[in-house]
Image 1 (cartoon, rainbow, N blue to C red):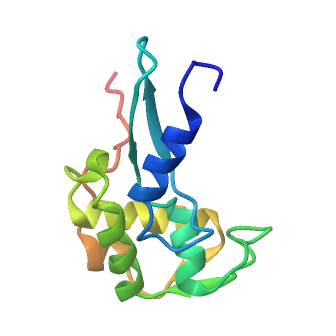
Image 2 (cartoon, rainbow, N blue to C red; image 1 turned 180 degrees about the vertical axis):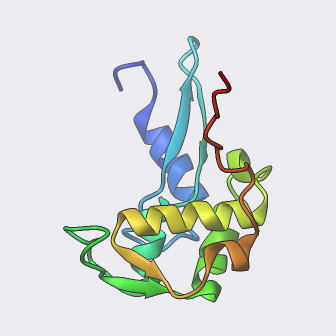
Length: 137
């Protein structure tokens, strides 16, 4: 490749690391190329939007999110996706309820509704709503 890496070696290592993943599943990769022409990499879980589409059997999200809804997620479906995403190293520290709310935010941006109450099901806001400041003259 352009950084002097042996692409055949990377492909072999990548295929070995992802053999348990279904074909056609997008797999984000973080690849580090070293000056001695070696490399290291790790894979992440599929994008949240992909997992939502797979869970609902959708080809794509809504063309008019917020107006045109293309599906509805259940609590069980959100928790299933959150368990998958929680495997990522950069998300392990995120509280499970917070991760579920983030998934619902992604779903909303795709035109996917939620059948429950996000705050009742996954916990209250983590930060209080901003209060309007009153000016005292």
